[in-house]
Image 1: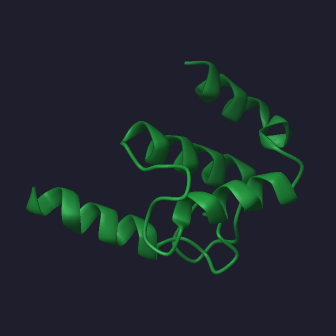
Image 2: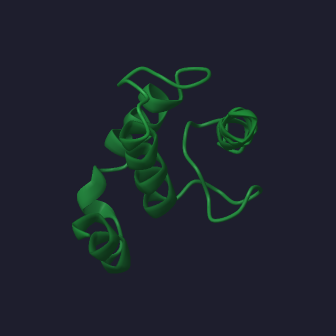
Length: 82
């Protein structure tokens, strides 16, 4: 249980100010990383507005503001189909 708490704390703190995630902790937000992180949060039980500092809602807004998940690169579409 302690690992889960530490992991989620790191996960929520690694997001960017705009609500998205990059390829690394200092990287700018990308559709690939933001979409996969959003999906993982939802699969792991966070609600639509869940997560620290409304992480799910902010990620979803970032995705919509950048054209939706259909704008993910082809290798991201492969991961989404799995």
